[in-house]
Amino acid sequence: MKLKKLHVTLLLIAALLLGFAGAFLGVKLAQPDSDPDEELADLTNSSEQNNGTAPENMEKVTQTYNLIKEHYLEDVEDSQLIEGAIQGMISSLEDPYSSYMDVESMEQFNETIESSFEGIGAEVSMVNGKVTIVSPIKDSPAEDAGLRPNDHILSVDGESVEGLNLNEAVEKIRGEKGSEVVLEVQRSSVSDSFDVTIVRDDIPVETVYSEVQTIEGKKTGIIEITSFAENTAEHFTQQLQSLEDENIEGLVIDVRGNPGGVLSAVEGILKNFIPKDIPYVQIENQNGEAEKSYSELDEKKPYPISVLINEGSASASEILAVAMKEVGYDVVGTNSFGKGTVQQAVPVGEDGSRVKLTFFKWLSPEGTWIHEKGVEPTTEVEQPDYYFTNPVQIEDSIAYDQTGENVENIQVMLAGLGYDPGRTDGYYSKETASAVQNFQADNDLETTGEVDEETAGLIETSIVDRVRNGEDDRQMKQALDILYD
Image (cartoon, rainbow, N blue to C red; front, side, top):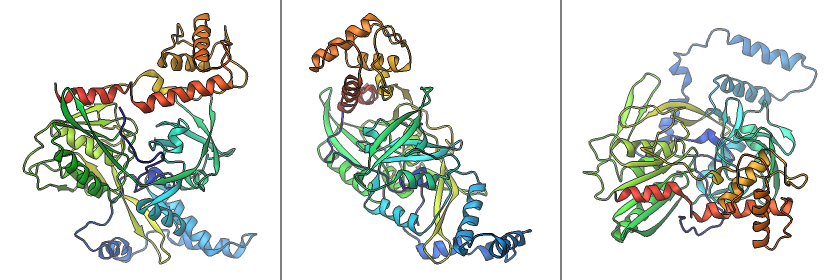
């Protein structure tokens, strides 16, 4: 089952995305009831916070700066050394969510929050030193190309990203609409890496989609949230009200593949569901002090609700899922990503640069920290095997009696399309050849029984279409069924 969308390409997330990657998941903007300038002034007044004393050995930084300026073979700009020092301090934290954003990065960040950006449409993070896909955005070029959560990006246009920080890697991946980028990808289920060519596009910030379906004779609302941007809570509340005006009797909230975004957005959504006697989130500072946030809602909704999550649901999506779970709503799907920290972007200097730094943990209503563990669904449901197949790398045609991961991959795809390959263990049997012939005949291809580049491409396209039409979406089916058990 699939929500009707007005745009073929969409989405992205507001506090972040392939322009700034996983770095901005869970960004905490200035609170609505506070003065942002005062708040940021407090954060940047480091002299007072450190009692006006410089740390020991600070002179080493000055000495190194002077040494380079006076004796290094080449001329070096002051700004290069200063920004390099800042980058070094941030990198030493070994926190994938903390980063330094220069003026250009800040402009891109603001663009991401406010309107749209150009890129491939994927949230990335640094995981164990590797540039890793958190989630491709639905209907984005990244999703069209078959990228998946936990894919590692090894190189961009033939240049390795090893040793680069997250922002540096992202800058290589981003680019103008219509331009191509070739990513070398390593997938956990495949021993060999493979190349994916993606045409960059506009990724507009449209984040909420809804529809009504009739399930077991009952009107059922479905709301999909693709990311949490500044206006997501407002749009969600408006669409929820429209669904309730149609007298829905149940609701599914789908945050699968949603990499997160602005903290205030998910808070605004949870105020619609979490009663006022239970905190919808707790924000804990470095001293272990937790600030609890409450709604003004008297009681839960009168209709049943299911929340859908998967491994691409991160940060704000997890705040929503675990809060709903702990007040008794059903959560369906697979374990989520596991990001339980909150960042703030603080001005440094006077040129518009900011340091985005992890300031807080977020905790569930019951005080649980899901960081690096994720949210466990109340009902675990895996998607069909063909949802997890890989792009087929064709050099020579694949034929009878051959073996390998490519053969297994094709067999799983054929089975998903209703063509029985006889086996899915990677041996190209006569039954597999017959299944290929049947597929070729049904698609006006030469019936050779061998998988060449044209046949492989059409099999992949057919699989993508089948995933998108939602016909075999077991998770959505379970989320709908469980409403009226």
